[in-house]
Amino acid sequence: MRLTPEYEPVQKLYLCFVQEFFNTRFGYGKTICQIIKVAQRYVDVELLIGISEMPYFQDECTKYQVTLENVTLNHDTPNRSIIAEYIPIFAKNEEREDVGLVFQNPFLENSVELKLFSRRLIDQLGFQHLDIGFEFSTAHLLVNEDVVLLSDYLFTGEDKDEKLKFFSNHFPEQSFYVVPTLAGDITTDLDMFLWPIAPKVWIASEYPSYTPQADSIEPALQVLKKHNHTIHRVPGLEQIIYEDINTMPNYANGVIINQAALVPAYQRKEDGVIASILKGYGYQVFPIDCSNIILSNSGIHCISKTVPRRVSNTQ
Image (cartoon, rainbow, N blue to C red):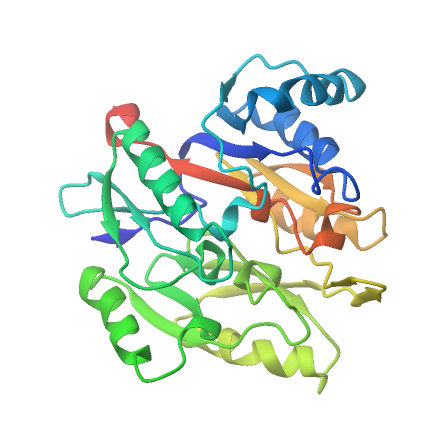
């Protein structure tokens, strides 16, 4: 069995729209509309949304001139827009059948309900499911061919070796490494500084030498260099802290949808660096304004999830 890299062909993109909290301060509706406008040209989009949320969302679509041509509206919603906290992780077994890994996220109040939602989603897709059996979070794992990185945040305590053994036993074709997360980032997600964009190719944030941020991500970079992976560095932006905001803007929190790359943009001169890298790998690049949603410690990858293309769809 093999965990599926997210740059491989995909058949669907999931998004979740919730008005309360996510739109009162952080404008998720605008970002979701931007994503839909681009993504539906390349893949089917499924939006998880409650019936009561529809009028507000339709107003957002009108405001940002979005039509829902290839969008399915699914009213079985988890009511949480940051889906990278709980959405299944995808894999293929030895027969190349699709598998979804499910788990409970220990940091979410409704973790049991979210796990049940993930199982329903996997059943809807027609995939098999595999229960991880311990607490986990989707963005604590990044896959690129033979290498899988795991956030060290959930690999502490006496059972850390057993947790690692679960992955190595189920996915013997891949090597697993537990690495530190980005210093100062309260999400502890790996997608806040690393993005696998092609086979054995990564984008990684770069911070000034000898800073806590530079030191914290070095172990992950050393693993990738050991496996002869290519690493393209992009500017690591300064931390934003005020009132109840504490976030690390970055260019690694993007999504690849077949030939399209959706990249975080902040209306800064640095925005162009990541675009030039991705164009070099044959992607059409679409900047998505993340200036507001990043204030909630979120980006494109945090609020969306691609589903691998099924084998039958490639024939």
